[in-house]
Image 1: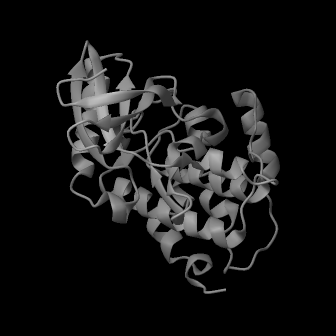
Image 2: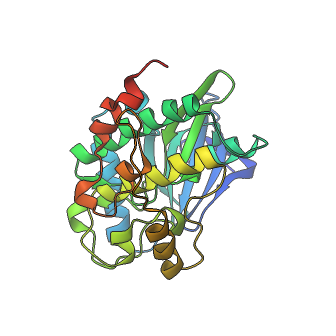
Length: 263
């Protein structure tokens, strides 16, 4: 079915989340393939918040800063539709293709550097993504551009200073302790999620697969080790420090010896 801009949906979805569905479409005028995200409208304030963040991101190069390129938004039959560049597959789908569901350390380093670049941009904007996970990280083209990734889905993103205490944000396995405990939150909640992602890519399974928030806190306390480590390694305790003020920043991740060393 076509809309007023000549977009024509194909008969299958490429994504189906809690708040939106994503369809692969082709623009009949240009034959360009795009991703069309149809959002379930909750409140006008939610839509306005996401729209303002997408506008802020337009001041940055999405290819250099590793986030999905937003083309436009429009209303169609009382549905909010957001048009984005079409990407390949999620990082979740990518690791599932591996027998061990894990990646080599060199591959993880490549992905982490790109994601840290995205988080650095968000930190400059004082924005928290609030839902960083394997499903919201996309491979651009896993064949032609191996390990090239972009962050998607800014539907939960907000100004970090406006995160309400006790707000239900972040997917459970990637949820920061301050979020669980209802403490003040900052952009550092995304760094916690990045640490969980890094560990999962290495281990082949979630680091904190808790079925409830109490179990999540148990896992966190049990895995906060006291062993000595060489400074050249990017430890999970850097990104997963229980104290958010002591958590490593995106720029520090990019400059860490683990990232800069050639071997």
